[in-house]
Image 1: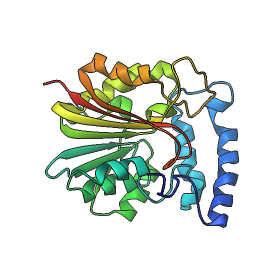
Image 2: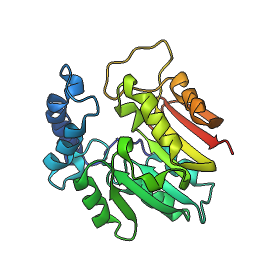
Image 3: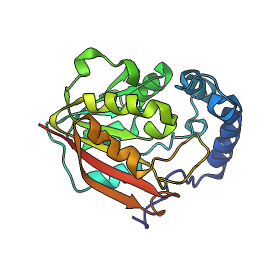
Image 4: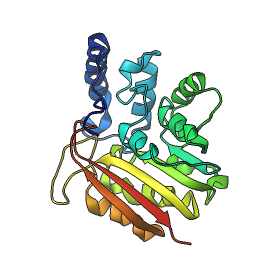
Length: 236
């Protein structure tokens, strides 16, 4: 994986400059970096897309490509016929990668502007506006595969149990959950956001009917920092 381009490393200097300027402005608005406010950070996520004004450089995660640890995982797998849910779909690249491997994908994001942007980029896919913590009832146990990249690490620790329960609830018995997140040690404190996950954060999914199948501790290379890539199966 080390030979692949670094995620969040932008070859175009002007793109990188615009991203750095946007990050500084967004950090100044983020309640998690400024002493409180809504722990869900809903207004902040909406502000990201409103202030971007159609420029992907101004969306911190808008790299116009699937996450490399998802792309690498999918390179040796097919998802033909599987109904897949992509959480926090952003600009749509991860959903497109899942669809490219044969999945029937529903992707959702909290922010309507993000959904409209993704729909414009990938009009053949199903993008919806939804809240992880108040998802449509008909999504309960409706999916064969769930993709979760970077949503958990964007939430403070107090919201993680509720988020894990919601994510596990989307899976059919026998379904699979893929989680990609920045990594830290259990005894390591990191100022966020983002808040990298520790191993126990991932293992806690087992309290919601999932069983850990693989857990990869991936050093910097395909990404600039250490990451987890975990696959869970829902107990039948």
